[in-house]
Amino acid sequence: MKPRYLIARSTLALAAAVAFPALAQQAIDVGQTVPDAKAVAEGLFPEDACEQLKAAGFKCMGFKPAVRYSLPASSFKLGSAELPDTLKKQLAIFAEVLKAKRGNGKAVRIEGHADASGAAAVNLPLSQRRAEAVRDYLVELGADPKMIVPVGVGANAPKNAQDPFAPENRRVEIGRATPPS
Image (cartoon, rainbow, N blue to C red; front, side):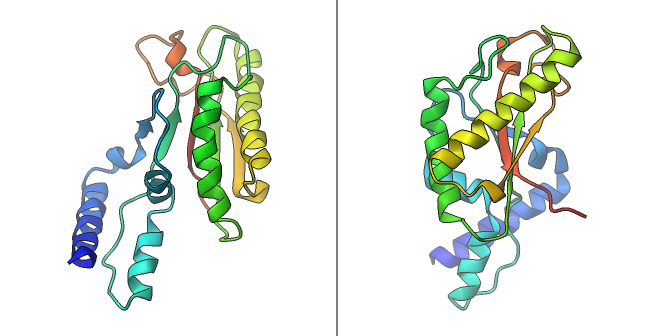
């Protein structure tokens, strides 16, 4: 009964992603909570559920798209790439998931973001340092550095577009890296 439920749930999620592609692009806001490792693994690597079904002799009709995680709102101080304690607790879960996926050929993208309080010449390198600080911490906890692509986007993609100076714009987002073309 459970495998049929997985097939139906995955097929429904895939249909929703095709019908509403913008929904697949939105990041899940983790806020101040520590996420569940199983949920993070399913969000970053949803195709693994299909592979498990096939290995068990079932047919997989598709899977939901990978998601991005926004960690956490207002985690960074102005002008800082220092990882706050709450963010470190959250990243420990991501490191656990990435350690389990070591050597699978898949990668995650760590996006560093800044608010609009500084000039672009300052915000872009700051956001890159934030992404690299997250990568370094994940690697310190055992994640494979080859799986992690740190990218700074500056203040170009605010979470709160109504207030580009809002603290929630200072964040990192973790999602699947697109394969090189």
